[in-house]
Structure formats: C-alpha cells, structure tokens
Image 1 (cartoon, rainbow over the protein chains, first blue to last red):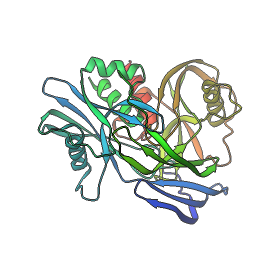
Image 2: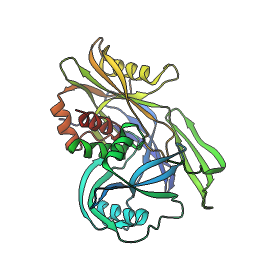
Image 3: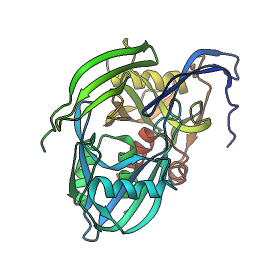
Image 4: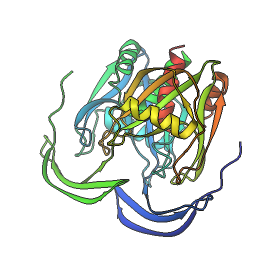
Length: 181
Length: 181
C-alpha cells in the first residue's frame, strides 16, 4: 500500500528542550494545498515495556500513581531507552530489574507500537520475558512510587475486561497475548 | 485495591492554552517526600474511536499521513469530543460520518483507555458499530488527508500481527475484539 506524500515543513522551532518535555512548533503544507500554521510535535526517546511471566505463570505488574490522570493504575513494567542502553531489549531488562527485582528468563520482541503517530515521534518496543525470577531487591528511582504485584492470567484478563489496565500501550500487548492463547 | 496517595501540587502554571496544545507545568511533592520541580501535564479533550463493521463483515479503516512519525498509517476512524457533542458516542458517530460517510448500525461502548495516564489528562472512548452502511459521501476537514478502506477480519489481523496498525489505542481495542472471537 502506497505511502501518502509527506507534509512539507515550512518552518520549525523548538519551544522546549527539556529531559521530559521537548516540543517543536512547525508550519506545514499539506499535499492538498492546505497549510497548518502551528503544528506541535512532541519528541520523546523510545519507550519499552515487558510482559514478564514467572515459572509458575504469574504476571509481574506494578501499581503506580499517575499524576495527569490522578489515579493509581495497574501497569506492566515500562520505561524509556536511555542513551546508555545499547538496545530497547536492554532498556526493558534494566527497567524490569530496577522496578521489580525480576531478571533472567527467556526474552523475545513482541510488538512495536506508536503512542500517538500524529503528535509523538517515538515508538514503544514491547517484549515478552518468560521464566523470570527474583534476582535482587527492587530499587526504583526516587520519583517512582510503586509496588510490585504478581497476577494470574485470570486476574490480568479480568483487569483488562474492566478497563483497569488503562494505559493503551500496555492494554494492546496484553490483549494481543490473550488473543494468541 | 487501594489508591495510592495523590501527589501534592505545590504550584501550577499554564505554558500554552491552544486548541491542540494545552500544557501546564507543576511542582509536585510525592508522598515519600521527594519533589519534582517541573512536571509537565498535557491537557486534551476526550478522544473517541470506533470499530465500524459493515453488514458483510468488512471493517471500515482510514489511511492517513501522520506527521510526527512521518508515516502513513492504517487507522480506525477517530477524533475528539467537541463541546457540541452531547456524549462520546455522539462524537464517534459524527467522526465516522465525516471521515468515511458510514452511519447507522448498532452501537455499543467497548473500552475506555488512557493514551498516557502519567502525562495526559484525557481518556479515549472506544465503540463497536455493527451493520454500518454508507449514508453520505465523506467530507473530512480541510486538514485531513485520508482515504477510506474496507478490510476483512483476516486483513485486520495480518496488519496487527505485523505492527502496521501502530496507534496503540486502536491496536488495543482491535486485539480485544480478536481475543473475544
């Protein structure tokens, strides 16, 4: 299937360039001749998340307060690719160990999705890690206020059905996992 | 399961208040005593999308150029709740008609997900519309550069498996649909 013609960028300026907030404002021209005078693009590093499953079929979840929505959510372990991570899989292994203390296991790439292709530049790389095991105590960052929970497949499915796993990047790969069973 | 204690907002200021870009910067205090001096919250209106299926089991998709990722994507019909929409379902019906010309059918709520609970204030409301039919010509907005495509279930599944339906809010509800088959 053909790719549509890219928009022409007539001007582009950075409004913010901070670690968690990098935004540029662009004036763009569409192939149909229309112009958008102020189009905002949010730049982020690549993201990762992981469906981590123990030898006895428990799913490793975290619960974390999320400020913008003002709620405490069940989530997969997730994070960003740091400059020091040689690959997205390395970033996911690092985040799983930091946030939960789980490691080892057999890892495979599972999906590559976009949080929002119209406004955000990054992709989210998802992995499945089977047979993970506790290898250390969790040591989350100071700004992470989270707890670790082991859930059965039935519990995961019940949370999905009732929209209690709200983050779309995580719901997508967990529903994919269930569709594949 | 308990909700974690909310963060205290020590200060909050709007950096931008534009139709497609409303951002506030906050200084917050976490329950563990840590402070985050600059936390960015992106305010958006509620979003909607719809899995629209014709009487002969074809899925109504659009293809649209997405500037931040620089690619042309297969997508569900989607949009934002306008102030004039009495409900998210009304917004989804309006968007489906505008973008594709399809209407009528039997509608039900299907999911309520968050694009990103840590940074974005809004939810995305998903619907399934069965037995939709062409009721008018599409009349997308001037800034929408899209084409309408009818896909079989097998085609939708193949696109999902190969990460060609990249938008996570859409992948989530489509994988949910397939898991429910």
